[in-house]
Length: 445
Ligand SMILES: Cc1cc2nc3c(=O)[nH]c(=O)nc-3n(C[C@H](O)[C@H](O)[C@H](O)COP(=O)(O)OP(=O)(O)OC[C@H]3O[C@@H](n4cnc5c(N)ncnc54)[C@H](O)[C@@H]3O)c2cc1C
Image (cartoon, rainbow, N blue to C red):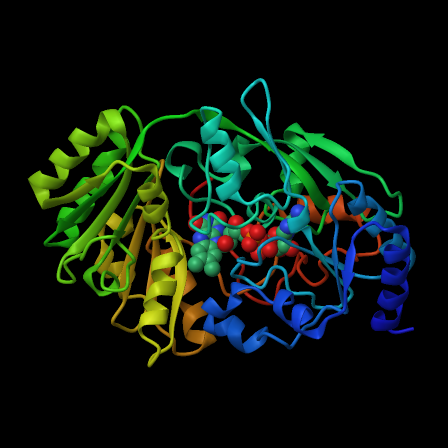
């Protein structure tokens, strides 16, 4: 029997058991079978929308549905690819072998626990979790610039964002525990805690499906969106690097060279001839951030409304790259995610790695800078050739141009041997010998 035939049998049983909504609508299948990999011209060629399609979409609405769906899929040898909001930009949720696309957005419960952690269904959106958390006097440790993505997708496929300067990545204590369903035919779920969690963070669901997650929070603070502008890259960097000595670290500090400024989505006109710095600063540090901006450049505005910090966060990480691509459709641009002090100290050496013009979008990590290096696309070979050159000047790279699990790979393989013995979970994403450079060494962890 083909995968499509086996899937038809499995979803008939899933529908009969009433353990999730089943759809075989071709338009829905097309939509949920791809993600934001279109941001990479390399992936746009390799995994364009429509090339790999699931055979059915199953949407559980109760936590108990997930292990039942997996049990049935296991019996019928049907691949299952989990999906949250589908904003992952590496093709991570592409159902390479067809089968069931498991849409987890129906699991969206949110509970603030007495100790201050928050337990949320895997499909709960970070926007909703943050809203509930703030109302209860808590700040979630971190969220991505795609704040409307799901917490299961963020932990399963994301890594960092607003909050990362203080709390590092999703793999550094953000997750307290996770209820996980394995693909071993058992029809069970198990709460995972401590060191065991590493096998389930940023491993794209290949070791098990996150059903709910318990995440860490801080007591809520007042945050403001602070905008500055600078005549030169050096002036921008002087303030950017100084922010690490603030008594309360900022939640975010994003910078852009002038070329990337016109397509940003700020609430005011940003001067396109100047470098932009945008900081989510804690209230007691705002005056000091404004002062530093004014010494080396210009303090443009401070917007104390919490919603403005969301807007500012929406111009961080991959977003300025996407805005630039969208605003310049006549040319094809790619980006490389990178980290290391040469980004501050020797930007010309970083730019020289790719054929110009090359633009830098800056982020701040607890130990130094990160950058999205943006340049015109001249083929996959040229993109990959830049990785060892960046390495050679002390800049680590995470390549967003491939779909293989790139963190804790050995652990994921070892775990999946037990939790997914038939290799049915998100097939094609886990290998010890990827054919392309998958290195992840941007120094965040
Ligand atoms: C413009 C842009 C900006 C971005 N900015 C950031 C950023 O600031 N920080 C960041 O880390 N990422 C960022 N990303 C990547 C992505 O948006 C985030 O990682 C996001 O949190 C993914 O969530 P999602 O719900 O969309 O997950 P999806 O894309 O649906 O899934 C992501 C991965 O997790 C797996 N998965 C989904 N749900 C589960 C589950 N319940 N159990 C197990 N595995 C699961 C999927 O199979 C897939 O491999 C950005 C992407 C874009 C396009």
